[in-house]
Length: 446
Image (cartoon, rainbow, N blue to C red; front, side):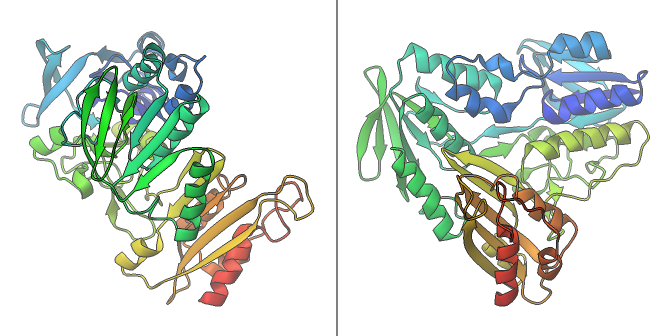
């Protein structure tokens, strides 16, 4: 049987490797458009922060290892242009030149996502960068050195924008951030978002919210930035305005499309064609809390979905129940974590959300080094069922969110969660863990 995979990063190479482990006689071919496979994209901001590291430190496994040790036919520079479902062939070009056709019995589309680019004058000028691939990361690191960058404008205040603000700050670069949104991280309660915004300001990061970037123009070796009401000069611009799924191949082949133009898949990762699967940042998923289809592109889902596809291709019946959108990132000294639904998302999904917001400590009150920690929990008024929450703090936020994620997967009520037996020792938590304190307050509010 011929198993062909379009895309060679998280979902694609996870599927390729596991499929060969499951059945070493399976013919596995991977078509990757770029020169890089199997790398930790999530580590790029932290790599940029360290001038002494090379970007290729993030490569998990090189192409020759897949070929020589696992027998995977990994083809680099192969750009898929179309899927002929009738003839069961992938059609494309090699390095933009010679055409190719590859026959498949089972096909995985793992084409990922691409950065959103603003349709404004100057967006294609030298010095304007995005960060999505290893190629992008190399380009940014080289540009920082070759142009002796001292000031960067980041357009967008999402995960990547905020992580890159920290990266540039670590290298002594002045950071200016702009966003058309009127507030930072709108899924956070205002009080918690204010803590993050204050952290940025305290560290010298200049944030302009509710403003629109109008245009860019070359100015000497740098760029002149035009907002609606002001202009200033920077050495470099990073566009961090979000990503969109690379779903055009699937759409052109007549496959069903899901939310935000992602590829619709069932719990076995099948598309609307039984012989074609989709996984990773190009595909949708089911939200455990709502049961609805969602597009929330995150790393763990991509890897897990790749494994599931491999199992299903090799005769095992594997289904993924879904996701709760767990995410965590770091903004300078603040950990920011979320899972499940925000209050507004819960209302949109038809729940009657009740929430609690508490401020506690990361360790026992008398233990040295304890830090303030903020917890927000949300539940449904009618059932008491937990719907989601978020945590921020200088320590203890990032990993605590996993307890809440497990509770959401288990469908726990607030009362059940409050009764959980959580570990305690002064270096790690107060006797009443901040999550339990928040759950207790939520019970009162319910």
